Image 1 (cartoon, helix red, strand yellow):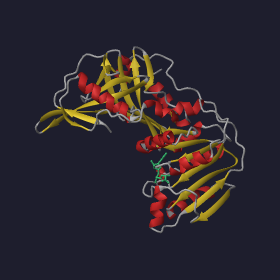
Image 2 (tube, helix red, strand yellow; image 1 turned 45 degrees about the horizontal axis):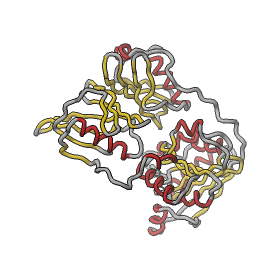
Image 3 (cartoon, protein in one colour; image 1 turned 30 degrees about the vertical axis):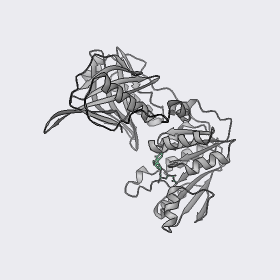
Length: 394
Ligand SMILES: C[S@@+](CC[C@H](N)C(=O)[O-])C[C@H]1O[C@@H](n2cnc3c(N)ncnc32)[C@H](O)[C@@H]1O
């Protein structure tokens, strides 16, 4: 994560602009760290200023705030450079590279779509293939080249892999790839029913010590069945015998299934991971599940908004660092940041226990909204949203 460090930080009056970045406001927590509301073109995100007491005096760590970070990372690097320039900081450390020609520009990121876009903007005029956790992307790029008439959705949570694959798509002129920077365990909820031809899960992290983090699970399989067209397939490929057995048992919990098992079957493309396992002479297992059912349409979702006013002064009175738990969902109100008497931010986590969402609530005058963007209305988030409304009595 890009960051800079300095000993001399004197806040300047905001809003202020520098090199295309607008620093809109400063919000401060009781702990003393600051969030800087930052805008670059149509993107809004936060920088965080953390004061640190050190043996040889105080210094400040300034970094892109994790929840609101945007892609490409060059935008965040540019924001830190502009912030340093505006505040005339003398840096004691920086991993923010100077501007170079040839870096990926924002426009190149048009294949990286927001979750809201997948929920409502995706067109289903072409057959869909989905790859979960594409890593270095060899298989995803292969499928995209093989099937120019199909749309390939890649889901990945590792930013460097995402940026690398975006560059490759551009270099190879592939215009049929869409990328979601999202947890695959939730993502499928966003797709329409009966539309996907194949879902690839190649070499997922086995999570032997934390099995609840595995991609393959009953809810994931149920959602895969919903989005798969009849005769569509969910294809797991793994080098882990343990994961293979676990997945087989998970499929086995279904009443009825059509499952194919293969051992050491060669595919026309081999990923970096696969090459490594092959060099180590490990066995490779495929489990191919074929969907037989036509599912009901995707449930309609209501947008999660606060349609009644919540004054920041009220929110401040009620705010406590607490966790409120439901059966399959929760809300943890974490930190309050104050801009002024009428505006501020509350950092929270919410949603499903196994896949929480980290968000801010942005209070401005009497209006409140999720920041940097709305929360998608999957079931557990709807329940958490209702807890938040009740907590603030709206
Ligand atoms: C072991 S690597 C395999 C990468 C690639 N499929 C291959 O065969 O080389 C697993 C990948 O899955 C990604 N991943 C892990 N959990 C994920 C999740 N819940 N949603 C999306 N991607 C995930 C990781 O970031 C990583 O890139």
